[in-house]
Image (cartoon, rainbow, N blue to C red; front, side, top):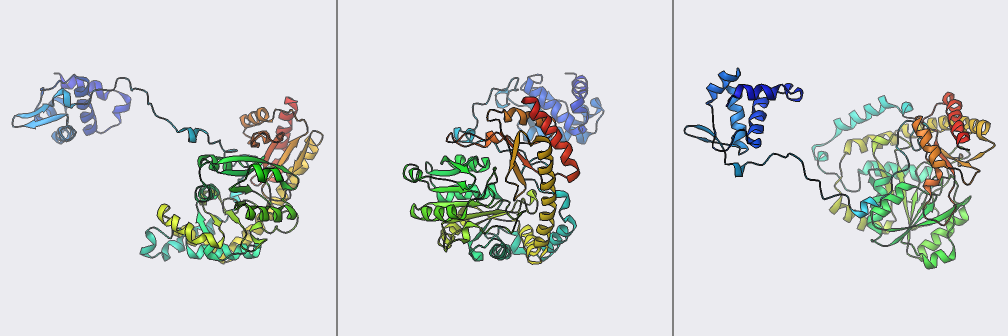
Amino acid sequence: MDYQLLFSRYTATPAHARWSRQRQLHECLRSAIRSGTLGSGVRLPATRTLAQELGVSRNTVLYAYDQLATEGFVLPDRRGTVVADATAVPPPMRQAAPLRVGLSKRALAVPTRDAPETPAAFAPGVPALKEFPVTLWRRLLDRAWRGLRTAQLNYAEPTGEPALREAIASHLRVARGALLDASQVIITDGTQSSLDLCAGAFADAGDKVWIESPGYQGALAAFKAAQLKPVGMVVDSEGIAPTAADWQRQRPKLIYVTPSHQYPTGSVLSLERRMALIAQARSAAALIIEDDYDSEFRHDGPPLSCMQGLAADAPVLYLGTFSKTMFPALRIGFVVVPAALVEPLSAMLARTTPRGRAADQLALAEFMHSGQFSLHLRRMRRLYRQRRDALVAALEQQLGDVADAYGGSAGMHLALRLRNPRADDAAMSRALQAQGIVAPALSEQAIGTRVQPWRGFLLGYAQVPVEQMPGLVKQLAEVVRRFG
């Protein structure tokens, strides 16, 4: 066997040329054994001899032989090293057989999210990340890490750090009119994590869950993943509008709503309907999931009180997140549960969901307690109001004859509804995506077939500077008019 020729052919490959000599020789010999070039029973040269022939150090050969022996490709004996029996050597994979496994039917049924949360205009759900006080946040994180006790490096309490739960409870009592104490706050990894928790903890496979239509596709994904049966409920200018027949024929276990800024239309659930929904849910032994995802940003008047605080011990699971008020990568959200559910849910989490990231939670608690969170919210409200105004003005100027804007009174997005009920907004959305503009089609937010889907776009404006609005809306208008 000409080992020098064998080795030179192997190391000439560009992919192998970057490897160390030890690895090159080991892989070369292993490949030769697996292919049958070095058959079973072949005695390999002595380490000193092979080192001289290849022009490498003896340690390089020793390393290769030791690795091959460990892997079972060669057997050392008194006279040297012998290639192992061919039956013990795994055959080369000339063509891998196709995998006969894949995602479950349940996983394949989960819908895709509305749009990638990227900084591109007009991607919904993306805050003005450049305006976040990163330097201050670094100081708070550093202080939190310096103050950590050794015990806090272990798994944390499954419900979250007490300091953060207290900070959230204090904020919600003042800013959102919530009725709660800190024990009712459960820290999660964000809204999607909260939805998964609610779907898994408070409903069984096959139970019905009402969801607004058009509505949030992330909620639909969580409910389908939990094998619940989503029922799309019509949304009008006053929010979700279930009928008496719905309560009789489609009795829900969970009811998902975005009452303060309906996603995606932006409508506000009227007080009359809020109170009726709470009373009917209580009577039906159902729980309302109130997703308060971006209502901290109210542009026309003060923030609305949450449903959770409208009645004592309301059957409401209140969801909040810091992805919009802070930044998405923080991955901290929370669920406020009724007092009666705190103990059983905490016990379940202790069995199934070990927690960590104490430093992040403690830094956020200090950010809130120090008043910096409220200060940041005030700054962002002013900024988002300016950007909302710029977007609405540009839309009115360039598309006012063919479309109407909805839901701009709060949050970080608005809905642009085309007046043509047959407009192909999905095709328009794809054309805009090709130009680097993310504008999810409203028709694709429909859930079920009970309502004629809206045609138009979901436009996030929080991350778009005022001076860029006219040019971006011009591109949007050109696509809309091109498709007719």
